[in-house]
Length: 458
Figure 1: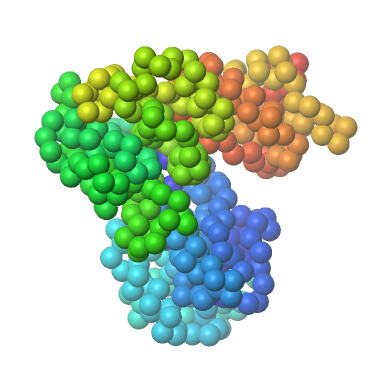
Figure 2 (figure 1 turned 135 degrees about the vertical axis):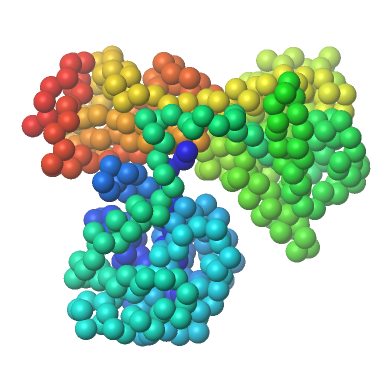
């Protein structure tokens, strides 16, 4: 399973950002005594009692942004809520229950995830009685906390752990049937996505037309191949924001993005008869930001096969999509089904790669060898120390690297370490999520040194 997300929500100015900073022990989010400061999501990888989870801060629900970014803030909040394993509903015990708190609670009422109601700013026990008003929100036990006075931090963290999904036992999956792979088929308008889906389903399940923009919603199509079941998610064609004149185009874009987020593998469709556009690059960036395994699918290849070699297209795509150089490239003809089966088999391989686990011992032996070959560059005239690493999640494979100073490991060196992981283990064509964390002083696990040996940490 992926690293679970614990999402902090609430109306403006109830102390959500202060809560994130308090729980993480770092000043990650800007805290000001006015609404609307937090706009984009802010997240941090937390560890408590040997469990990892991502803590996500969001903007205030119901805030009217002074810079006309209300719509953007709302998108970010909904994205976080959609991905949440646990939700922290934050209220202000000093201001008491107000109608906007009830509106926020109503929005969460039908979600199938645990919600913990936190009465913030309860600096002294005398505020605890005032928290009883919030039982009207229907969220059970209210946890009074104070970031400034460090009240009930351990109680809250333990409560979060109790509501997280159960961890994998020894990194092994439960002995159930192999999971169904969900494939999102995305791309700009008229690149042949619906025709491809019809070929998969071997029936006219979608409206196929030469008029761009026929598909206006995301539709799931179930099919079987070699006794394995799949779900293909056909999505509306995307066009530039300046061209989104109707609300139906706006919502179509968001449905496509949501389909990407819930997919296991994404097929990014490109038209062999057209050049790569800004929309293609935006979609690629969105897929990359969500760490989704992706196949770059060059469709309508029967038209171009004789006039352009595949090698030239590969070089062209690598030049256009620099963040996706590891992604495989497929050349297909969706209308006739040419190479479609091979594409699905490759998608299944990516799905399996994204679910692979590497033992901590294997991972640290690889890092030892990689650091021996190329030590990290000096930072402020000192050699950074890398202590150990562990894989904490799958889909995407998520690795936490413990070191003495996370800022000391440059982005190029992080890419070098990830490249070493790709070469050695079965992650050649899928994105890997890497977190750098400073090792706690109480942690005495060994240090991987630049000479390739292992020595006891000081």
